[in-house]
Image 1 (cartoon, rainbow over the protein chains, first blue to last red):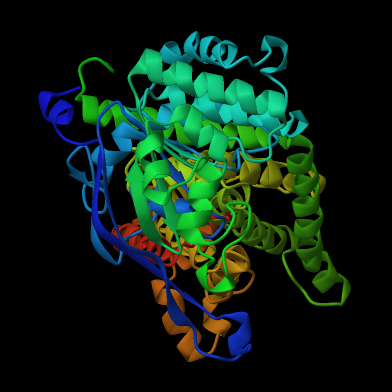
Image 2: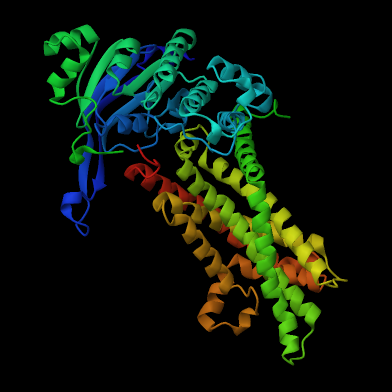
Length: 275
Length: 278
């Protein structure tokens, strides 16, 4: 990693805005689509090596934020920089530094874990010689059974698939790991395994982690600072104890309720359902 | 050799190999389906090629061997073009369906490398499938091809493939713009291209406005050149009249295809069309 990368924030967004054009149910089938704000001027910074969690209900704008930072969406205003590189114009530089694990472990389901990882690694310039030993090693590291490496992904449980998704992200040694609800839908044991693995990755790889979740305990366990995103607005971003003090709450759940007026499990209002 | 080239070029070549590797895995994992579709293509081709015998049976005086070969080449080029469009356009649609497209698009791989990787696989796979189709049907009809210059036909097909890839890249943007129906629209482009190109009939029988379209369709020159090579034994030298228009169309079609895809990608990123859900 260059000195320049070491000295700049891992993530720096300033007044980041994104809107989508949607035809809402209440408008009727033939109504014109209208712009609906998904992110309303989000500003925050994540230091290199830090783990930051963003809490928010479904539809609060968490996934939009992750997609903007991973060059999958274009912003409508403001800026987003990854280690100093503009996420919308210097996309090649950003892509070399970032990887992402999302709520859906997206794979070619007929292909095996090994095949999915193999071709994905080539996109990052890793040759067959470089991945021949690395793929079995990393799969073993995430607790994936060796005898199932050649089995189609469709035969694997969601927990297993999510482990392969983590392996895919780590295979490319990302400096910034964007985790978008990585444990949603997993059974308690798989959830714990994935969380332990995230902690291990941080310790061993010195990676910066942005964790978007609606799991309050997960955020509290893994992150040094926690933010609350509601209706596309980042209401706060600070260590848990400061956040509790700010809202006069004794638990993160109480703080979330005090900040947003709703529980984290509730879906956002239809007006606020975005990518 | 890999050590002597620049790291950036090495990265792109490895990435292109990854695209080819991925498509190979997909063909391998769906091998029985591929075989089934091959039988369907053979059956479909037979329904067209039997027309030659049908014409003779109706009392017309035709050279059945020649007409059968003309029709077979039309059907094989149709099938080849279908594979090119299918591999390029359907893979984009498939990636979007599986959700892997976001991971492909966020990888540090240039879009031309990504698309040319798919094109490279499409051409290799298409040549194998089209060659097998031609061989099977030619054997079934015991076609006599004493003058055939297969090398010349392959050169025409290779040069035509540059243009086909350019058009394929243009149609590959359709699943990004319309995730539900975009891939099917690719087949509309395939049909439209072939209908004006004299796939089973001479271009001269078309209305004048369609003949104008035939002049800019690469399939026109591909069909004419391949027929000349296989039926009349025309060598590469005498095929130049069909090769140069193919080269000109290719030089225009490839950058145009990349630009169309680039704009489609920007549209998809602006409107959130890459995501499947969530």
